Image (cartoon, rainbow, N blue to C red; front, side):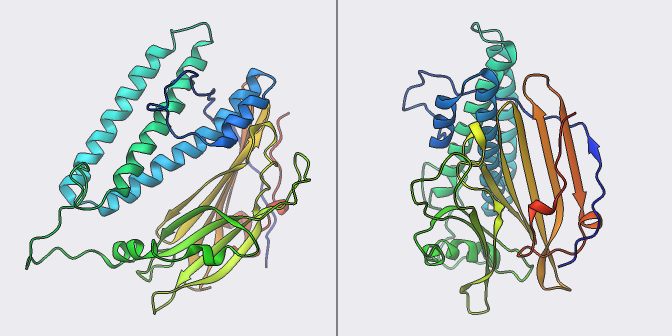
Length: 338
């Protein structure tokens, strides 16, 4: 493992300030919000605390939406990709218009009403896109599903990666969650350019039930690579990247989401109270090393009451040659407000 000296460059950044979902929403209309978010808001002692809770939840929901949209686009015929793109753009316009109108409603501050609306609509849209993904190709209620090819038709071949991603759903990923660990998150995609669908798991180890706030076992990020026979094999793991379930402060669980793109993956965490922090770690495949190296780190911090923000961004040039399994966030410089 080789770390080069870090070059620290702090700059101002913008981070969304989101408040809790609107109370009183009926169960039929309620978007899927995590239990950790509800627990976080229940324990909040100030508006800054509740905004920190909701900011973490928005990061997660926005990640859900983007991941579902990208995966759905990869599975659609060209005409339907265009239709989905147009629908998504129309949704963004409608969301901004509706949430702008919400700003003038009620006794809460203007930005609070706007952020309530943004969070709930983002979560609801993520639910819709995931529902589209879960529908079969022949489902009549899914306008974006591929129509099955007619018997004897040609030219309807599915790409190897798409076919293997579909097959990967049949893999027993639980086989990699040993020792009582549970799968907190799983994403699939071609991570090394060989045309096979690999996977990244985030495993939540069991606790003893006696941990205090800020204590407990860290999560294990596991990299699975598909071999020539089509089986997933454990390539590497790292239990220093995702903190424990209660290590996010009043914001609750600090784990945000994982994002996969061709040849790379990103892990996002966040937490805090009045001072909210967020970290993004991106690992990119190196054909020369036949391994995944840390390619980019983004660390952010924001004071929810004063609005002061700072960001630190490090690239491979500053980070040096560090593999996924050797990466240790504790070696990184902290981002601190003055």
